[in-house]
Image (cartoon, rainbow, N blue to C red; front, side):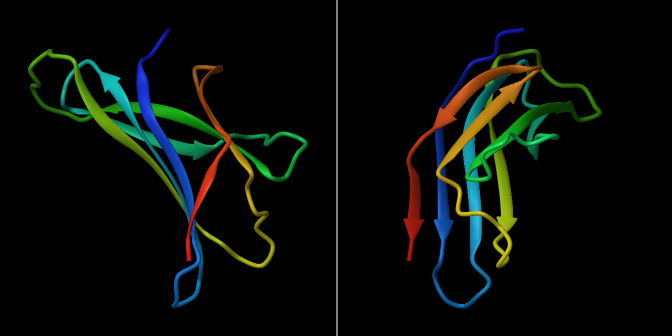
Length: 109
């Protein structure tokens, strides 16, 4: 299934106080406003530790929703520990297909 997405961005926040944190956000087109988008670490990750791979999941909230296409934000947040690699790229997958590739990681410091 093909899905529309846009405005993907990743950044590492090193502003005090510790701990540092890493974030990925992007907008995904969904079938109604009751669909939530989640980004989860892909398992297994690839062979390159600095390349983060995420899977996009869409979950329909209960209730009656008007069936109209709308955009929702997908987000991934991670606390950076001493053992966390410094990511250089991020790939986002949906149902096994790569839908986004982020090769520039922003930095808030």
